Amino acid sequence: MPVYPVFLLLALLIALPVSAQPVNNNQLDVNIALNGFDAGGNDSLGSNRALNLQYSYYLIDWLAADVGLFVSDKSLDDTRQDIVGYYRASLQTSALLLGIKPRYRFASPYEVYGRLGVQVWQTELEVEEYFNSNLPEGSTSLTDKGTGYYVGIGGAHYITENVLVQLEIRRQVQLDVFGGDSAYPFDLKITSLIIGLGYRF
Image 1 (cartoon, rainbow, N blue to C red):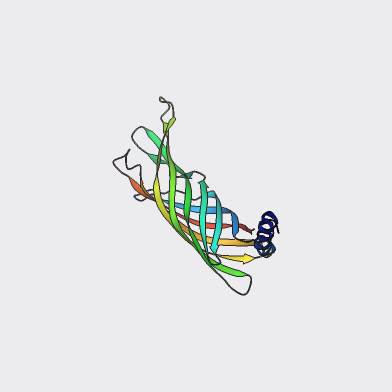
Image 2 (image 1 turned 45 degrees about the vertical axis):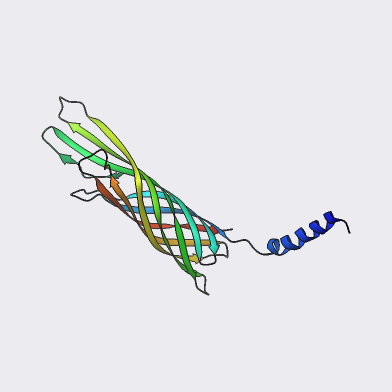
């Protein structure tokens, strides 16, 4: 028997069981996050929303490698007054998330999961100033980049074997924001309630 058909037959025998099994190692989550920002000190940053995308690849049934993208709206501080007028600060951030996602799936269509990892973030601080009638108003901004970490816990309900709805609580911490540009660096803490859909494929 020629060598070429033997290799072809072996390749088909190896590939056949793999192709016959359903592939559900991948999961894509599309979520909306409702956030509270805490920059420490006497800030009163308001709540905001964010778009959160997560891709998970399950290395084994209960553990996935996890990568995500988090992009927020502006979080506005209260308007304050100084000797020349009024000013208001705002923070806006985005982050790349890299971590792991352990899970436990019950016999019923429910699962609980966690997320834990590091983040690479970019945050912009903007200050808007409103002076008296003799001076024009204006704004200035400053952007910083750095690293931090995140941790979350959530639950999911499977609508079908591939589609699920999710609810998650997450804490992200950005370390030493504006540490190289300010005498008053801070750690930005973001607490999020995350709601959305996942798709297994």
